[in-house]
Length: 290
Image 1 (tube, rainbow, N blue to C red):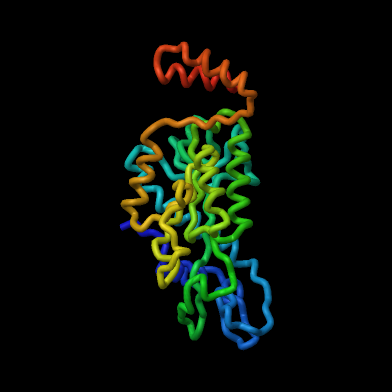
Image 2 (cartoon, rainbow, N blue to C red):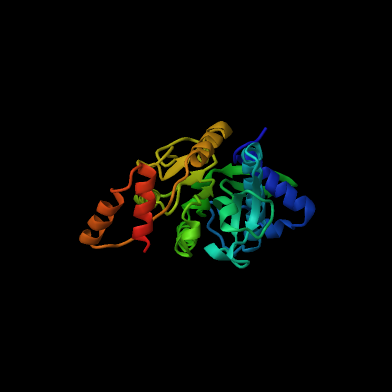
């Protein structure tokens, strides 16, 4: 059974990393009290070091987790969930590939017409953990520690937004490809209106959290969704797949322009002379991009 993000998934990451290739010092901060913390607890007053070595490891783990999360839906529709795809035509290079995508063909180098959806993964360790006597002890949720995980980090949000805009402005080949930012935390209230505007403008088709319970005691910060549905938290795998189905149900197309009202009125008038709604839309898009 496919599972969403949880404490069990974080335990899996730590034990897998420690078993295969990592030392505790690569995964945990070491306090001056000789205790090993995933994050500095809010109560910690001692000297603090920095920890960069975990970033690449959790990045690899969460991308693999996302592939597995999407693979069942992809396979059931005859598609593939592919990690690290490259497509120069839409700005996805070897230095900046898509984290995960659903594609018609299973290969790393893709053509735009074979990319059906792009998922930018912005996940990290959410809870605080202590490594003690070869055991993991949960010290509390993200409100108990000093770090900002996942989509709660402003730099993660800005990187995801920047990557999405870069794909959109690389060419019209990306216009039909939905872009989802996949996380495992809520977002801060300062981004509520921003994500709704990005969603309504068609730049991003959603900021999705696949962590049903990121806070141990529910409060107002654990939002289900923003007012405009730019951010959504999924509480079950079935709910997640239902939204994937909606994403794939209808062909959508991104368009963006800045015209005078006279130009826009002329375009609308010309497009309106077509017979069907689809033909009107096709004429409108052709004129606005001319």
